[in-house]
Every structure is written in structure tokens, then in C-alpha cells.
Length: 362
Image (tube, rainbow, N blue to C red):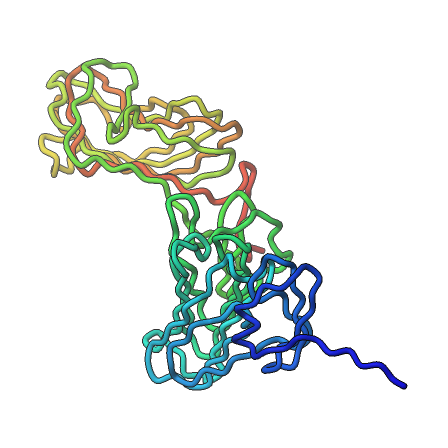
């Protein structure tokens, strides 16, 4: 005579609210699957089929037993209220997906946390593209992590004071650039608008004067900007494209010039061009000169008695040892010259310190 084994069973709702003894197995009669209990986790751990819930154009409160929430119709913005992360099996994944293809920037699906739980450090996550999906994993305590997000433009979660919404890990650029690719090799960011055509994406650091700055009356080189304490920017090893523009007033009426240079603690080489003028007024075009320099403290104009000057400098900076870089100005004749508001210096990485080309050069 055969023997029969009968397990306790109940609906999915009942099983979700049940905490059984450790190693006890019960039957979820709604979904026809076994659920293993551990004596502590409400709802236990479902085995067998994944629980897929179809939602037609409505808000939904996800259960601890749900694994897939599939929207079959959407006519407006909808929300999914997540279960507490502490009630969801640690390491288990919940996927919310738009099967209707109607999701959009206005007809979104928003996943909202329970209580003070977080989703990638924030309060919610959003699907805003047709056939889009978000898969999140519970830590079994107080947080969800997005482990997959697909379809259409990426919609990262909101950033926090300690976590950016999107972060790339430095790696090796592809041997052949691929159209539409964004890459990061630890030296610079790159974008490719066409196959084999990789270009640098500028990540500029910039300082701008919002009010006039009075220089120290001396001829030795001194900081040009004071929007920060020392007017210095800290640069890591690499090659940088830089630009600086400034205007000076109240220079000495004794015949003299003014110069530009780069100081600081970094080890670097430089090469730059300048267009500069020293005239009777800031808008004057007298004595305009163009120069090319590879050293600091070089005079930009010929000496004269005019008391105003302007300059635009563009160049390349190759940093081989990290440190500060300080834009500097030097005066041919000491005076309490005034750097005008709007003066700026900016630098952007374009590659490693020895880079010679980026792009489809032949």
C-alpha cells in the first residue's frame, strides 16, 4: 500500500503572512509552488516558478512573494509601492517591467520605497521608456540596489551627497572606437560619434572672478585669481588643454609690461600662445602682440606707459607628477594692479601625460 505525504498549504496571501519553523516546507496553493521556511522570515523562500503579477493600468502594492510585476496597460503615471526590504528575501530580485510599450516620460512607472528604505541611496526609481524595466535586489534589511535597468535612455536614480547617480569605472578603451560609445580610461572621458572616430569629452575645472581682485605691488610672479584661497587647481598626471583670459587696470604709468605664467607644486611642462594688449583703457587695442611660450613669467606685450592690459592665453599642460597649478601674473613695474571681474582659468584633461593624438588621425 502506497504512503501519502501531505503538507500544510494556503493562499499566496496567507503564505506571505506566515512564518514557519526552520526547515518547514509549505505549499502556496495560489501559485502551486513550495515555500521553504527558516523560522524567521515572513513568507519564507519560494521555490519553483517565479511569481509574476500582471497589473493593468493601476497602482500596485508589491508583496514579499512577488518576483515580477508586469504592466500590461498604462494610460498615465503609475506607482509600485515596494514591500519593506527587511520583509523581502535577502539577495532576491524584484523586476518591474512595462509589457504594454506605453510607458513614457509622462506615463512613468515609479518604484517607491517603504518607510526609510533606500533605492540606490534614494527614495524611488523610475521607468520612463517604452518596454523599460528595473530589477532591484533587497539586502534583507533596509535597502534595495538596482541590478539591471533596460530599454531606451538610461534614467539613473537621484544622486546623493555621497553617491553619484552614474559612475564609470576606469578601463581600457576599445581598440576600434564604436559609434555611440562612451569610454573612460582613467585619464579622460571619450565619446565616439562614428565608428573609429573617438573624441575627448571635456571635463573642465574652472575658476572665475566675480569681483575685482587687487594684486600685491611687486614685480615677482603672483597668483592671478583669488576666487579660492590660493587661486590654485590640483591636477593629476595627464595632458590638459587650458585657457586663461584676464584684464588688468591701475597698472604703473612708468613704462613696463606684464606677463603670464604657471606656478604650483605639480611637475609639468607647458606650451601656450597668447594675444595681449597694453593700452590706455581696457577696451583699447594698442600694442597688441601674439606670442608662443614654453616657460613661465614671459612678458606678453612690449613696455609702454599705458595703465590697462588684456590677455587671452591658450595652451597645453603636461603634468607628470600631481600637484597644484597656479595661474600667475607678473608686472614689469610694481603696482597695485587690479584684476577685473570675469577673469578666468580653465583646464580639461585630454589624455595621459604623453598623449600625442586622440581620434581618427592618419
